Image (tube, rainbow, N blue to C red; front, side, top):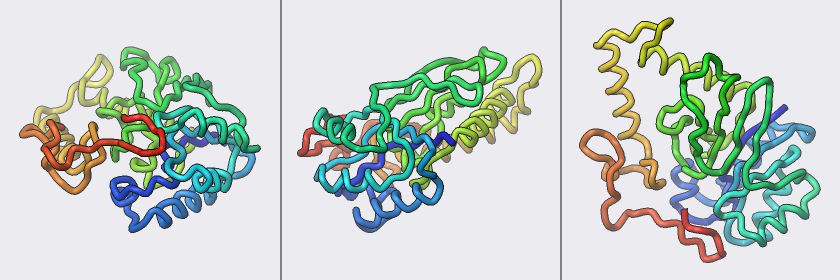
Amino acid sequence: MDWFTSDWHFGHDREFIWKPRGFDSLKEHDETIIARHNNLVSPDDDVYVLGDLMLGDNEYGLSCVKRMKGKLHIIRGNHDTDRRIELYRSLPAVVEICDAKYLRCKGYHFFLCHYPTMTGNLEKESLKQMTCNIFGHTHQKAQFYNDIPYMVCVCMDALDCYPLCAAEIISKMGNKVQECKAFLGDEENPPLDPKLQLQFRQENRRRYILENCDKCVWQGSRTCIGPLGFPSECPPGIKYKRDPPDGGYYG
């Protein structure tokens, strides 16, 4: 079975990482990710990890990665420094490390990358004719990037710290395509009633307000949200900056 996951952030002892994910400490955060992963994944499964496996103490972080079941295919993230890449290569469970990867799975075409990547549109008749992007990096709660059905987020933040299997991704994308087509209207799907269109827009606006903004992982405040319900400039004092002292990149 193929699994997809991203942004474990083992050893990253910053409250803005583990608290928005629902934990009271780094230890609880790391142990829960390991347990939830291993409850689903078998040792012979392929696990595509889309970057940012660990930060902080490399020895501790690597000890966590070693406990994760499955054959690990690592896609490099912005916090995966050259030194960490060397450490990943030393693990028997790691079968490949790359910057990005095209993957054909169950007749579908996936582009795996740490960063969200625009790979297509809704002009194709079938998802099997498209290249669909699976990504991490954003720490968003929503499972789709800007509601685009062929851009699926597998960050821990979006999946309650569980991995996502290929069948679930395909199902979620298919449902999202139908939702978008019904809203936009096409030759086979008439547009929604205007009242339903308004309801759809209001629900999307509510979702933006309740979730963290796309530019940061700030939680628990609406101050990052503009008057129309979309992200605006973060105010002074809570602007989120990734500034790890151990060599990770900003982003």
